[in-house]
Length: 257
Image (tube, rainbow, N blue to C red; front, side, top):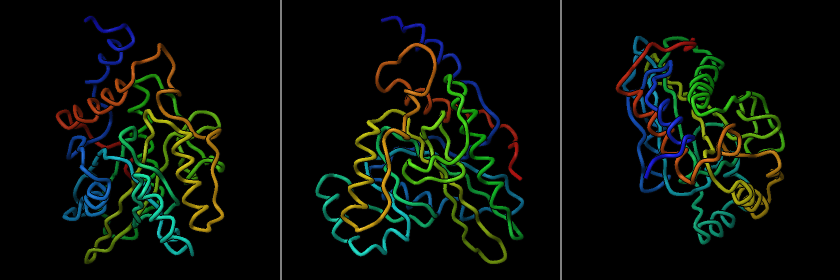
């Protein structure tokens, strides 16, 4: 069967490298816990002289929450009820609040080592630029800025207009005289955003937390892109291809700080 013009056009840009340098392709983990654990220790051997590296992965669904969420009075109850619904709850080291992971999302992490104090903004700017460049190749021009009514809001939310489809968080860990800085992003590529928001709100309701989000301020990359509609799953495949192809065509980092 001949590919549609929309699919053929996006496939043509899928192999083009963009300004970044990867150390690994897109991995698929059997559980989100395995992916999160790998991400949180990724780059442990980096030195300040090394080039920053990136990791991208996908996994079955889970709700990843911040450490402050784990201190909510109803955390145990919320965790138990969501696990029964097929949404295991995981606690990440980086900041931020609850964020769902699913086969329709991409997790991307940038890791660099610093000999001094490092710079918080450098990691955010670089990873945001990587994602912006990645998505521009599939006809999505995203804008950075907080979407307060979305889940896990932050200054480096990425989206179109008032709607968010990606969020960034950061974690620093000391290793001898160096600091390893991990900046992570969760990108909603194609998924049911109403269900994702429902899961987040369900967690906070059961955990006796105050946070709530609205699906009116969340979207996915598939809905945000311009051009002809794509069949389900095609966009995720194309983005995975772009990320994986870049491992074979490394270029110098730009904006790494």
